[in-house]
Length: 415
Image (cartoon, rainbow, N blue to C red; front, side, top):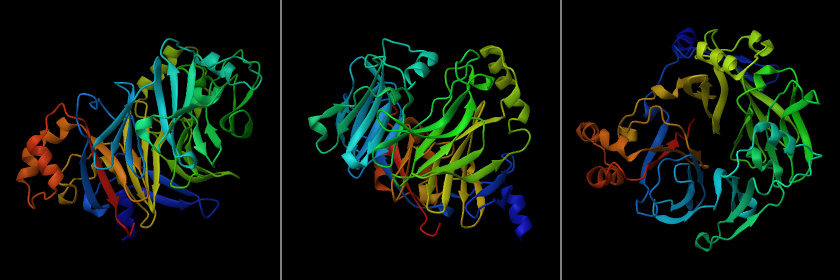
């Protein structure tokens, strides 16, 4: 039986050097899917009210609070506030600045917003210089870090963090008053050889460093701007999940340590070889050509969400994505793109959709209105029939140009 499970799931689990670390052997070409009902107990369909003021393109970033869905839309360069029932509340923009990232600061009950001036294109080499501890450069014209307080959204009360140069990197709040940040850039003529892929800071000071790299010789970090570790929140404000470029480990960052929790081992067709790290790339074109010729190589793990015993994660390729769900309890892995919709999800086309956000009870996805309406006939002809009132009303009254919808999924309690 054990051999059958291994064959079906293309997954072998090997305990690492510590009890907390696991090595996952994954073959993307063989990993199986599952019916949605095997993973999720409940689905809620939440249309977002469409008005002249609230209409937007797509969800770039979703922050879920007790009261609101807060949405960053890159097309309109605005932040939209909706109630948890989908009613529109408020739209916020920052004049002359393009919003890059939003995140929730629980301690201040505020949204933290990072934005860049649309009138300047600051190259990565200059940003790296501005991040230097000795830099005295005034960066206020280029980048903003703004708190938007949530106790009264309509009042739109804000406060800027002054002279926060790390705002260039979209740092992630951590352990109350600290940030985790990453900015990885190498240059042959760099005056220093040593830098770190992951840093812990407060507004002014560098507190801790992890994951060293050579700023002069690692040519994989010469081109295409700067690379970054992916830094992801959890249900605990003092714990972050970390991955790094071209490596296949998932780390847990706490106030006292960076610990490897998982290591993915991929087939030769999907893993960058050791020679990649010593390659002498001489131009961006040479680097781009390498990526085109090896498009199936995985460049990074991202969108990692730990939800009870389930670990959701994306494997970003040089061209495309693979998405997975690992069940720590059963030690099985599922191909998220092959999870088949069924009556538990009202036959909605959820395959290929990225998880946009989560809270303590649910994960949240999004679908364009057009995608939902395209499967109207399929949904209405299935047995058993969909009994979700919000979805059935949407199918009868919505237009393709309406706002995207939120899909709330509750993972099974036993997982």
